[in-house]
Length: 278
Ligand code: ATM
Image (tube, rainbow, N blue to C red):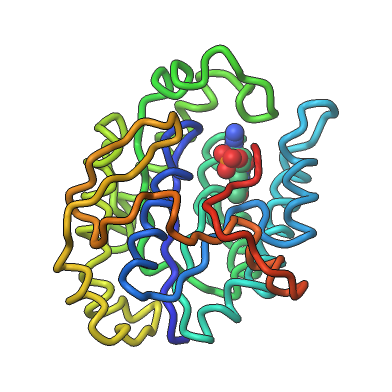
């Protein structure tokens, strides 16, 4: 496969979605073909399963929950991610197999071995070249979400979040070469810079796991960055010293998270950054 898979992980409200988008924008500005997807989601099946999985309106056994996440992942891998990587695209994924180990394994207490075997089948053995863990304490997660906590995971309680966070940190310790752990209580742009510094070497020489070819000149042109202004979700402007162009954030084309599904259905994806509501 010629492309490169980068995944973002973390507990709720750690800023994964924002950081995944920032990274995609930067890659796009450097001419890197990149697709942004989320888990569960990114395919018609995945988006339906996402709604089911997040709904707190009916009980779901941990085993059933795990298998539904794995189903969504298998569909996304086969329908979107693997074909994109084979075409030479980069794929940035908002959650991936490590979420299942952290949430269903460490959080719900299901056996890690069984979940790893499930992941192996769902991902066809595909490992990310880089997994970014945006680490925040559970109290910060709760504070950032206050006063809204309504879905199955948001209502699971602080002990659950603590186990999930510890699980993520344990996974990162097991494979330090794949993981980048970032203190996500730092300002958004500082986090983005740390992520970017770790991505740059992948542009020059992608991880063998990704078996990617470096997009010609991409790392070079992205290093010659000019300061740029970006607009954050609250409408305020941030100074982004590392970004390569002077275009406002909103003008840059960024695929919606469901782009893969849109493409497969032959529809044109909207040009503005857009994440389907949570
Ligand atoms: P967000 O990606 O929007 O955070 O929502 C997906 C939820 O699904 C998330 N919890 N919350 N809120 C984590 C949970 N999840 C799992 O429990 N296991 C998985 O394998 C995945 C992909 C997500």
